[in-house]
Amino acid sequence: MNLLDKFLSRQDFISYEDFYENFKINTPHNFNFAWDVMDVMADKCGNDRAMVWCDEKGAEAQFTYNQIKQYSNQAANTLTAAGIKKGDPVMLILKRRYEYWFILLALHKIGAIGIPATHLLTTKDLIYRCEAADVAAIVCVDDPELMNRVDEAESKIRKNDAGICSLRYKAFVRSVHNKNSGSVEGHLNSGQWTDFNSVSSKASNNFQRPANVNSNDDIMLLYFTSGTTGMPKMVRHDWLYPLGHIVTAKYWHQEEDGGLHLTVADTGWAKAAWGKIYGQWICGCGVFVYDYDRFVPHEMLEVITRHKVTSFCAPPTIYRFFIKEDLKKFDFSALKFVTVAGEPLNPEIYDVFLKTTGLKLREAYGQTELTVALCTYPWMEPNPGSMGKPSPGYDIDLLTEEGASCKMGEEGQIVVRTNRRKPAGMFGGYYRAETLTKSVWHDDVYYTGDIAWKDENGYYWFVGRSDDVIKSAGYRIGPFEVESAMLEHPAVLECAITAAPDPDRGSVVKATVVLAKGWVASEALKLELQNHVKKTTAPYKYPRIVEFVTELPKTISGKIRRVQIRDSETSGN
Image (cartoon, rainbow, N blue to C red):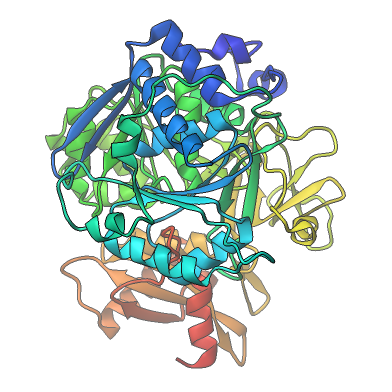
């Protein structure tokens, strides 16, 4: 059972053009996902499977829509009793624990603001976020080191004029493997922390919808972006955001009623909202959660096939490791749809995965600020490395540095024109940062900061962030094209392409390389990689500098920090 008929005027389209022109979402008044989707699902098909959870240690759990309604009601009563009310910002640092879904839905039911966050935040990170958003509560995993950082941050958070800190409630959820552990008892005994599982389990599982719980343009979620430069921005999403992900789930992931979908993402990142909750449940598709700390390719493949996951989404890096496994050992008969996003897909990965499994990887493009903006939809043949074509509701253009629309094949910045329409699910600006918002969204044009070009068939191809594009001897070189070429060589496990200063050319291409197992750095291998790139792409794009490293610098969300590599090059470190 799904609710698509309630929100869509039409579901079936005969072509991409039909889909782009005629797709329409029926927007309810004062829509609230928890009340208007999840509780409705509980009433109509309460015993159906809503979520399957397992972890790397062998624990498993399954939840129906009825159970999720009851647990979210208990969580809502617990939070309300703790003083959390409509509009209060609450930070959730819950990794992939199943309580995340109950508590996030509880915040929706109360009308509070959810702030998903990663467990890798430092004390400094926590202080910044708590002060920037006036965080009222933090609910985190039972990690004593993380809880210590929260305590330390609380002691340093700026107080108001009355000497009061905004943070007034701290709770933790217990791991299924540590229910009797004393590792957090010191925090519990201090009286400053609440054992959320214990208190919530005793709360009533009835919770009535509050009057005027939200309007559509209130803030539902705040995401702190993991930018490679500057302090993180607070991306503001309203209560219609979940409806924007109908396109994500129904037409990119191709979710089916009664299916089971896995998106590889920690709950601290917006990708979890894309693939682990909203669109999937509107489509009547179960959410599969694999809770792990260390990615082991063959273990994830075993989990996917054993639990008969029907659709799967992950960044290219995951598939890059998959194709190095013996895929013929796994039964992929239940898996129908596979998708990829986060960076351009290397054609070799696409070809090997297709040959072994018979499944076509479909790419898409979006940002924390957006939903799926460009995508390889079902009516389109995938072009490995292409982001696809614009999503319905998105008026996409490519602009030159002078502000003119690009010609076919010409590189320019991806922008979203909002003068005629604003896409469902697009952000409402950066919270408490009007100047910053206007710097990227003005004159009814939102500037993504990403560079791409469009081919003669209307497919868009990603080049790189505007500050990542390399200008060498008059040529503009996109890092991802060179990285893709490098990754086709079996010696290369990971690679980052950046600019290095050069007195003659202005800049030259530099490759920072992590080698695959069994390969050893040498001048001969460096020359082999350079020649490989010359043969794979335009010769002028080959890396004149090749540096071998054991790991690449990354943001806490896993994105390569090219700016750190560039800075070390210019500083001489």
